[in-house]
Image 1: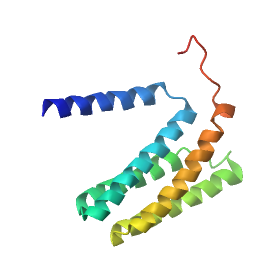
Image 2 (image 1 turned 180 degrees about the horizontal axis):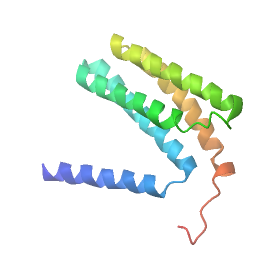
Image 3 (image 1 turned 60 degrees about the vertical axis):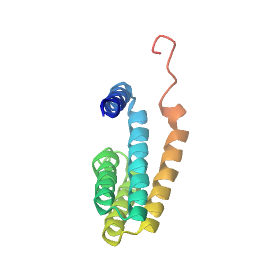
Length: 138
């Protein structure tokens, strides 16, 4: 019992440290990773018939997409890219609501694929927007 509690506490500290020390670019990567992990849990829950876990996991992914990724968009200065991402995030959240209602893991896979493509693209631009750490910063 105590071992699991300690592991969970350690995990939370690790995540909190990652967020506190992260660049804005890294924060977006963390959001993509968090949403995708939630979707992986949702898929397992659908396959196991665990309605509560499915709902919790899909709700978490919707929250990350809407309150994290979507809210981070600069709709005034981001131009067409921000507008398209905003529409795509809306689409993903609508699809996830449908997946939750239908317990349909094919929709979860669809949204995960969209997130994976965006995550890969975001990581690829990382070196251009987030310069590597210097020896003093490490």
